[in-house]
Length: 481
Length: 67
Image (tube, rainbow over all chains, first blue to last red; front, side):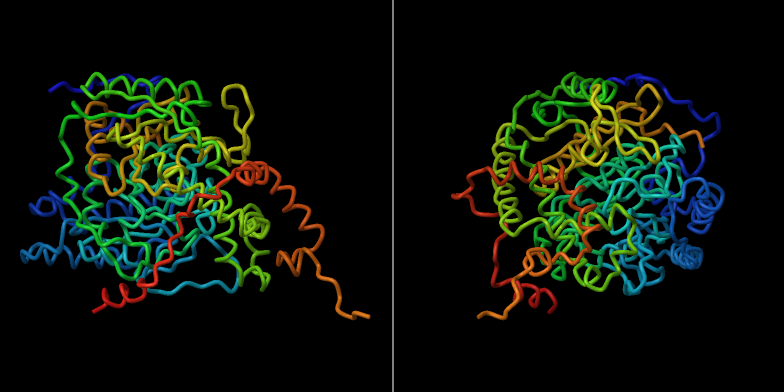
């Protein structure tokens, strides 16, 4: 078995000169120590609450911190002392995006518009996390109605002048800064993977229908995917074991067996066929991003994976398709708010997008759904000769707060079109895709590698991501807060 | 003589109830999106079934899952 070699970053960020602290560990390590009686859930929860209290004024990653988290942790502690293990997340604090309904914390979906209120009950994902023993520590900031890539006023822990992207920017910033070991996100065009990429965390968007969307404020019904942002691939696998499964309350959720995703970890990649789609994903990238991703591909080849290059020319029409579907769906969801004038109280960018959906015609929408069928088939054909497809998660790294255009290969481009260019194809096709850190740019900002797989083959995606992650120390680097 | 007022293409047909100034702002923001959608409009997709699938049994499936 050959192994991937450790690689130096393009520009190594400053390492923290401190002994390892609790927050630098992930949920697998926490859960193991709690189960062994070596870590108190109360101590762990207090540790994260202290960090939130100390650091979140800089990051604005949380919109609400749970008042009952310590109480829940104390109950978990009592149970573990009595030998009662609730599940694989027993006593582990997890943050949850503010568009997931929760019984003990308010949900705002990032809006302050009057006349909009959400139920105080647990969505399916929150219920699953609690059943597995998790302590829901707080709600993380979302771009309003999960419609955007900035998540104002949250900041990127690697550079406080920069955005954590979005719409799950609060979870990205919170996990990267060690304010929680994992945070839930939702991904309609890249909203888990983009914050993961620019914040230097892992973020997985499972197959559409793998994790229930029940009780998550809808953005676009056929594009929304719930999933976690974590410090490592192993943590993502553990959370997938908890979250995946059939839920009849979600019309899209599929009744399929759920494998043990942890079994995908620690396996070599030799013999696997790694696909690289050379058009679309490699046509216009920041130089440092391209270099880091090409290096990651050659690392996978060095480890014994075979690399297969191909093209999907129809991706040229993908942006039109996702615009038509997302805009029309969002406007349909917000229709009553539009008619009753509440949309005027949305933030300017979200208001414009919600109002714009009326300009998408019904034939535009259906042609987008036709194009989607073709793209799904194009990817199916590609997966006849490859096991995963790799490429950059984003063409850029974190951009500055207030910056609406970025320079990519000497060309000005709006961040709206650049940021999600490589992530939205997997929302249109519903395929599982993960972002893992694969280096840093010359300014010390994280770069993400995206790995996508066949429908419901999260296991192979996690296997490749884990194999890559194990031979680099990117995940152990921490922002200089 | 027909007393029925003509339909307004914005409010009646498209359901866009924005004042002219606001409509201008949103239209301008739509320009880049429209450039993409025009590419889609130019495609011949006559023989392609959209990926939206009507499933009459869905309510029964959901009901069965609750039992």
